[in-house]
Image (cartoon, rainbow, N blue to C red; front, side, top):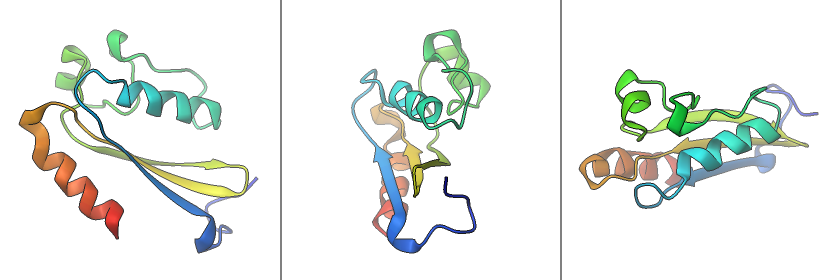
Length: 103
């Protein structure tokens, strides 16, 4: 399995998860983290246990307010993931994430 120090640049994958509110962005991210072995348990948004929703307000409301980034490894690839908010009030967070993903 690839580790953080031995992944060539061509094996990096950057994924930005963006969609409207309640589309399952954080849920998808939580499953990716679980199935790649990054977490030992799937964090459920409706239980306030999602790894990517780290703020108290996010856990209480069950929505993403700030973009969250993480890295995991799958086979011989490094996968960088940005989970973005879906609510229109947090569009600035999504725009900022797009700039990072674009390069």
